[in-house]
Length: 295
Image (cartoon, rainbow, N blue to C red; front, top):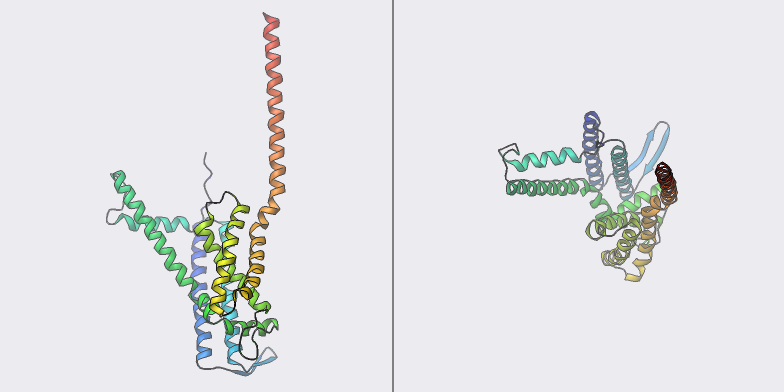
């Protein structure tokens, strides 16, 4: 009997509502950050719950708002991971909607020829890919704008939070800043995920896939980073290598932790199979001896 995944309509409904609200909040806070920079808002003195503070720099205020947006992204992705571990994903609902759209006016598969089944499958896959692309772009627009186009402003907000120094007096970015390294780790992680989707699925295991994807990821991202920042390649590749090493460790860490337990489990199964085989051999020998005595 096949084991079916857990179905929970209420959980899927709650997950959809949560993601819709999170996306609306992300866009709202993002627009507030853009507006704060456009009208040059400054907080000279703000008091809340007996605490007074002031932010007299437009870039720092806007960067702080962008930090909130990035944190909201992390919270949304974290909740998505938790819900995927606890409940069935929303993939089945999306697939059903795509198949429904691909059927056209006739909302049934009865009486379809193999060629018509194939046409419906191609149409459903096309709708599914287009839906994923549109939703992914809509979800990533604020993050891409902040991390790629407003990175100095974001670094100003991170400096305000973590007391780092990412912006030099002449306005250039300090390449040795811890905040910049954190952003580089995020960018390298996303770039590694893209390369894995393109070239990493054909590798047989986690270790080979992580190694095979990380090597081209280092060279390609370092080249892109050096061109985007206008710095020499050798200045970019050191930071990218460190970021890729961290991504590699996080990638293979679950496998490295679980491998000893899996080997122990395989050894136990092999031992039990060996004992079962020995028992069957003894039973076979005793049966042969009984047949000989009876004859």
